[in-house]
Length: 153
Image (cartoon, rainbow, N blue to C red; front, side):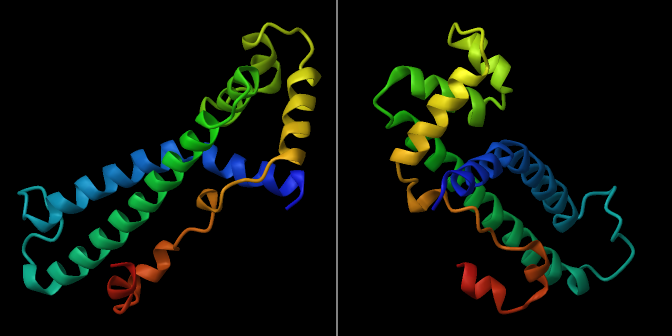
């Protein structure tokens, strides 16, 4: 994989924290609907009619959240495994904290934003990303597939 491909893979991982939060919120709302909260919009309809669908959707969301959490953990382990302290700071600043190159440069005590970017690109040319950083995620639209629950399992 070339440097651009590695960068794109790592960029996608920057958004995992936000996605985990959103999925957690969705799961909490679904749990409220499943348990029949008084504010539930399904109230007045047959709960059994929607119960199975809600449970399947909850399971799909939970599986997607677990995938995101695993990828986020893999990113942290990958960055922690880098031997060079400065490179760890560059990678963490860019991909974990979502800093711009200018902010990354300031964090490591440099004025020129090109310096950390060049170090970063040189490092990615020489290194291999672990397979666990794969950005392929299951689509939520697949949750409509009744056999999907068995495949996620």
